[in-house]
Amino acid sequence: MEQMKERLSKCRLFEHLSQEEVNKCILCSGGSIKSYKKESMVFTQFDEPKNLYVLLEGRVAICKDTVSGNRVVVNEFSSPGDVFAEVYLFLDKETYDYYAVTMEESVVLTLPKSFFFHTCKNCCNHHEKLIYNMLHILAAKAYFLNGKVALLSSGTLRQKIAAYLLSLPMKDNVVTLPMKREQMASYLNVARPSLSRELLKMQEEGLIIVANSKITIPDPELLEEL
Image 1 (tube, helix red, strand yellow):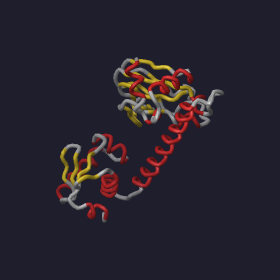
Image 2 (cartoon, rainbow, N blue to C red):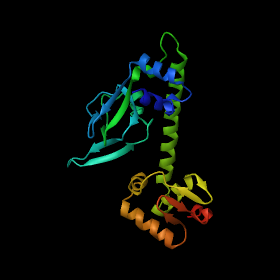
Image 3 (cartoon, rainbow, N blue to C red):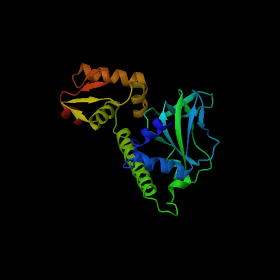
Image 4 (cartoon, rainbow, N blue to C red):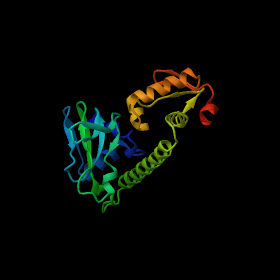
């Protein structure tokens, strides 16, 4: 358990907090660390949003079922320190729109939402840091979503791919995809076969060179002009 807590100091939510301060935050908030088996519900669509969740180990998917019963994965978290369901802390929603399910054995930290609305009577410094970090996370998510909206309105599939690739960190004309092909297709809101076909066409035309997760862009200006 102590090893799990040590990972939290590397989490964006606990940035600039010492291990002692992290422990105090969990204790002061009444938070808890819980282990889940594979295919366990962290929360359901019928639960009232009362908590913030931090993944410590494993993999959690945010999902919604179709009318026919098929599961649609909206998002997935697999890195220790990933925060999820944070938006619901500040929305007047009676229940969640989605459910969270573990895709493998996982460990999750749960923090009550009330802990993020104001500092306690002791005005703990670590509490103030945590609230500041939470605001930073929400601002970063808003920035990310604004960028995604701009990307999805880029036009054709090729233009979307070009805009996405150019948005990634580039070194020596090479970018590394941070997600798998299926996740990339979902992010761009296109079918995976369509994405694969377009990437192949762009490679045949010399616009890109695909090597697994590495993509070389010989002439970035050509992509900008698409």
